[in-house]
Image: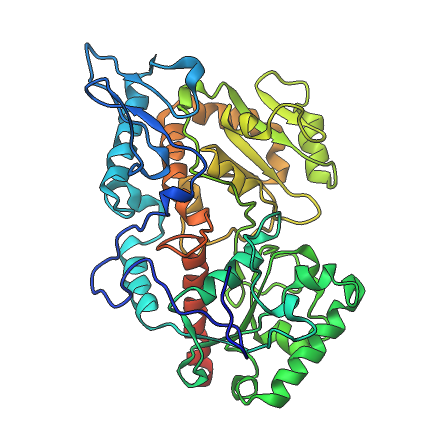
Length: 455
């Protein structure tokens, strides 16, 4: 539970690594005591042991003999000691060794970033210097639930909103001194406003307009830059119209949003920041060998867009691509773990939690959502761990994915999916390179824009 000051929300800053370090911060692991289950590994001597130091449940390879390797996979107890192809092993063994070293940016992992060296240099500076001021609200504020961090662990489809707010107050980026702030956070929650009967969907626009007017009147900070050094975070789809009565917020403030579509008038690329929609999952991501993923591609969901209807109508009778008009009766997690590729198809919005779900379960995402600015696209090279397919190419999907699955290209993508899992994970307390820190990095990049315009 987050402790609050008597007057304003705050918490003593915690950091997974020393932000003042001049070297690249080590990968900080989450508290393994919080994980739901222990994972047993077969060691090189054949002994079974609990190895909690293995991040994300990486497998421990047994001794190689006569060109074949025996491997036990986490959560795959039905087919232990499977012999896997040598070319697949080479990729998986490399991934395992990198993970063991606990160095997130070494060797072949470089290709998941646009520019590893630039990112690390900027990340160190961000970690050292970035400060964010949060407009204060009392615990007895009638809308405390809208402005203050939630005390329980966030869950559900729009958890990214709440996780960011909780994480900020638990980080060293938080400051109570506005004079040292680089950015100012407007802490209203669109999801909370939508669920508040006093406001509801119809009252959100007026609420935001009045709130910003009050901030402008009570504090001097907005007027210094016309709000260009202010930001808010929203993952619910109703957030894209929330600023229609506060035009200066829409045009000037940074919007960190899940609905990051070039086609939506309220979203401005380069000014605004695309963040991932993540449905929080418990424990470590499970591990399954690519050779045991028998389904070429999987999709299940409501038929609420022309893209989804086209997808299902094209492939619903295919034997290799598994698509469904609604939820599947079998466990959703098993469907993802049994598939090489998992399809993220545009619904009402370009964004859903399916891309992050695919990454958690080690499935290569296939993005079928035109005009979607992908989360962390400033940082991550999505082409290294996903397939972006125009909606017009849905009839070509099997040919495209089948060609990748038949070569090492798929194995490389699968390996890179495992490497980016940390970047699409929210932790109870922030750790380096997690979803929170990558959102912060995007804000830090946009804070540079503010200085150019107003210095």
